[in-house]
Amino acid sequence: MRIEASDIKRLNILKHYRIIRKWACRNNNLNDADLELLIYLDCIDLFTKKDFEDGSYSYSWDNRRWNRLLKEGWIVVWRERNRTTQKYNIYKVSFKCKQLIQRVYRIMLGEEDIPTSERRNKIMKGKTYMEKVLITSINNVNKDKQR
Image (cartoon, rainbow, N blue to C red; front, top):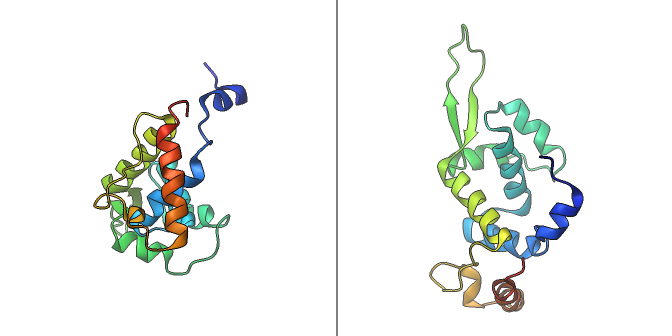
């Protein structure tokens, strides 16, 4: 069975994507490009640094992104190179990253709500004007059971 454009529209998958993305990025110290690149890499499954660079072309250039995502545990080595038969490392997104992406998908489908406690969602502290606006948006997303 093939998914059609009308199926995606009917599911309202992208209706609240911006707010969900903002929540995911703010609470995981990622920027928008990082999250979207991690989603791209998760779709590839196993990848090389070259695949990462190819995926990075459509985002703002961040020279430190690769090292930061590795250091923070979003990307892990799946197979080490050994200089004879394996000429380069092969990577995959980490369990932590897969969990975040799955959670974003569940929220987009309406199976789960965006957390509203201050402990589980930094935005709910409402320290800045932008956070206060996002709180209203988050509450609207959670009320919309047709997403």
